[in-house]
Structure formats: C-alpha cells, structure tokens
Image 1: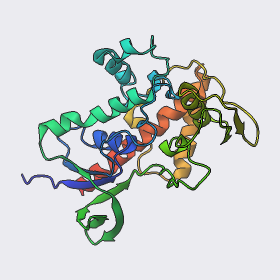
Image 2 (image 1 turned 135 degrees about the horizontal axis):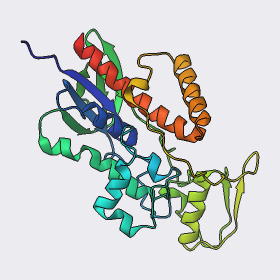
Image 3 (image 1 turned 90 degrees about the horizontal axis):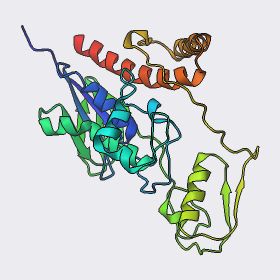
Length: 293
C-alpha cells in the first residue's frame, strides 16, 4: 500500500494561536502532516500578551478555561501542579487567575515533545514573512531575508502588532517598553480606554514607583466587571460544524449557549469553549480531508 501523501502546512506567526494550532495538527502521531512555524521573535508561544515579564499582569480567563485542549479542560491546571507553578503563585483552585508570564511558559512548552522527537514533522523557522502567493500546487511565502518556502496550506496567525515607537511621540501603546521611557515619577499620565489593558498599564506604573496622577478616559467611563464563577463546558469533536460558513457557525454557537443555559449553566461556559474547539477541529479536519484527497 502506498504511503499517504504528507500535507505541508505553513503557520505564519508563532504566538499562542500559532503554537496551539501546530500542537493540534501534530497531536496525532499517525497523521500525515508536516508543520513549518515561522516566528520573527526569539521565543515561540508568547506573542505580545504572554511576552510580558510583569507578574502583576494576569490572565482575564480562569485556569479552568485556559487548557490547550478542548477535550481536556483540566490540562492547564495539572501543568500548574506538576511544574510547581501553582505553589509559587496564589492559585488555590481551577477558578483563579494566574500571571500571563506563567501561561506563556505553558504555551511555549506545548511543542517541546515534537522538537525533541526530531521526526521531521515540525520545523520552527525564525524569520519575518513579507509576502505570500497562491501557486498551482498550494502556496509560497517569502521571508525578509529573501528565502522562499512552499506548502499545501498557509495559515495566518499573526495576531496584533504593536505600533512602531518613536522617541518624539508623546504617546505609546501601553505594553510597549517605550511607554515608560523618559517618564518621571510625578508626571501625569493619560490613558485612552478603561479596559483590561488600562489596568495592566496602571499596575505597571504603580509597582514601578510612579506617583503622578493617572487619568483614564473612555466613551462610557466603565470599568471591567468581575468574572462570574462558571464551570467549563467541554465540547466533543463530533459537535463542531466542520467546513461550514460563518452564519452556520454563529447559529451553532447560539444553540450551544441556549442548551447550556437551559441546563442551568452560563453562556460564558459555552461560548469561549465553542470558539476554541471549532477553530482547532475545523483546521485539523480540513488538513485531513486534503490528505485523503
């Protein structure tokens, strides 16, 4: 019997989304899939949100809803316990909020087994992608250094980029190191927005010894609400609507929320888990269909 053709998949972006996708594509050792992950930063899995080194920057989702595997919602909690991270942070149970740097280590470690196996199913390339184009056989991407790579499928997992900082600008994005450059302890700081990023910024300033007035402005003047205590609601793979359009996906998610609420649950239990599960399952299913074809 002839060997199944290998589906070559390029993932552009090695932040949390790119790493999670690569891990799910490679989870089945029998799958005929090879992944090349491109990331311009030194480390994979961190991106902007989890690249912070400030322990006061917390996740805005509970431990019970941050597992890398929809079918195993307690995976992240077990990782915290097995690595000893839970002993070093105030995280007594599955419903706490942990520092984002800790979660970054969890995401970064998801690919370690595949890199150590050296089976040739995963390649991580440090470089910045500048362009891609469709070809008769798939896609081709070009890097800033002039090299080119071809594959059957390309996935954009580029996330959000920080704006380019300028020393002459009187403003900066709040997660940028340039935001604190030249700031004196008694300077007045104006923050546009009163969401979770504002809270991160204020924590950075206060714990850094800033004494000046901090003014936050938003259209509605509201602060983030406290999270409700909700249980995670696992979603099985056969529940996800593969290869459907966005309207069908939205109807499915609304139905999941309705069923969850009718059973005494909360819409938050269903919606976030449904989004994560569908994204991972749909891409895996698409790769499997292409390999079979």
